[in-house]
Image (cartoon, rainbow, N blue to C red; front, side, top):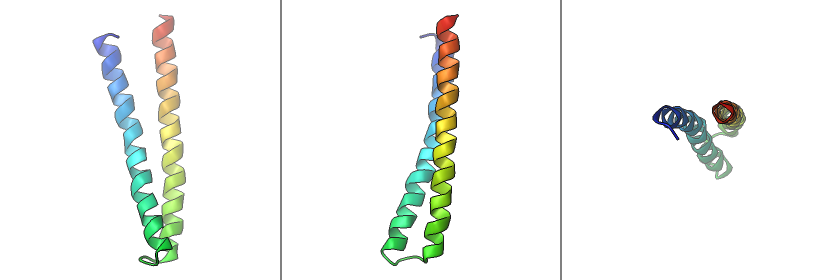
Amino acid sequence: MTNDEFSQLSVFVHDARKPLNRISMQAELVKMALNGEVPPEKALAALDKIISSAKDCSHTLAELTSAMSVNISE
């Protein structure tokens, strides 16, 4: 793997971690709502953010796969 490829991979990994961190934080909020610590409306909003973040992560991984397949075919 070249330095450029490694740098590109590092960017993709960073971009995938951001939505994963959001998913983790929002899941904690849902857990708190289920325990009665926050209103149920916050849990519903958190679930929407989890779904959106999962889609963001999926999109980033698809971009990574596409970029890596281009590098392999070169």
